[in-house]
Length: 145
Length: 145
DNA sequence: ATGTTAATGCAATTATGTTGCAAATATAAC
DNA sequence: GTTATATTTGCAACATAATTGCATTAACAT
Image 1 (tube, each protein chain N blue to C red):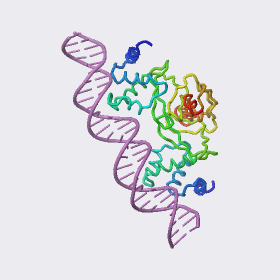
Image 2: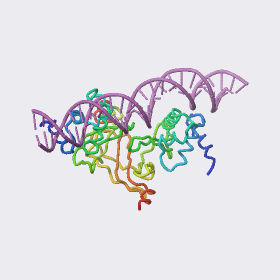
Image 3: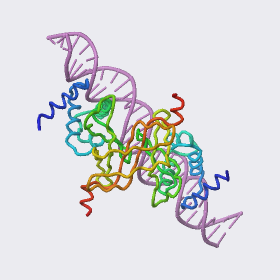
Image 4: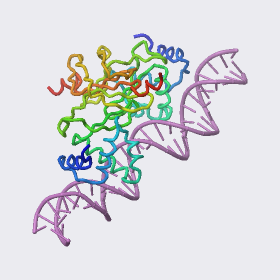
């Protein structure tokens, strides 16, 4: 693996954002996890390193620039994951399925699963689709058996 | 239309809930609307007729009994709709698509649209699917044109 | 009519998210 | 390297949403 920090710095510059400690820290945390990360968890991990308000603003800025995307879990809690590719400020491509595990509560981005096309009643114009599946993730269903 | 109130009272009794004013009022409001109703809206309409806490508890009880189902909109706000049929405390059948209008922010339950089956990665066990489409509802896309 | 259980209303608390503003800092220009 | 400037941060205050404990009230079975 090459230098992650350098990669993050480039990502920030590319999006016209200054290279600041809280921003790098958020990218560091998000990239180190295999599932979407909740706002409360981020807040807890960052502790006093950054103000709560700063975290909100960092996440908001990242979302606007298409660096991360937000997923609401079944409780309505905001979770964030780094966008895999092709996302920008103008167009998010996060129309993949999210999986919310009932047991560990992790949110996985199932990038490989596409949302099937949908027939809606006449008059409705669909812009975006948001599909969240709940159940047991691979790791948790292993443990149960 | 027959006597709505009598129908609601039966519904409550059937679920082992007492026939109280706040509960009947919530059912009355929800049944009179063509889309899911947000908690803030309910709170506003009920005004001082019922305490905020009571409203939360009524909604929670109804959801547990399968009388209503909760849908989170794109902002994470809770919206409630009366379950159409076959729902019970043991099993919710609300796996239809919800449509969140970007313009009027209403949430429609598209009961007629079924969520297509989904292939997920090995190991994942899907329990429920939750699909929210966003865009313009029939009424709003009319107005725009 | 009355006793028991369930439900409500109130007060207090916690969590979550937002806004305005002064101080700090990243970066570009010199 | 220093300085200017615009962005970003941190703080304080506020706003909204949700939860808990407890005393009072109301439903309904007997």
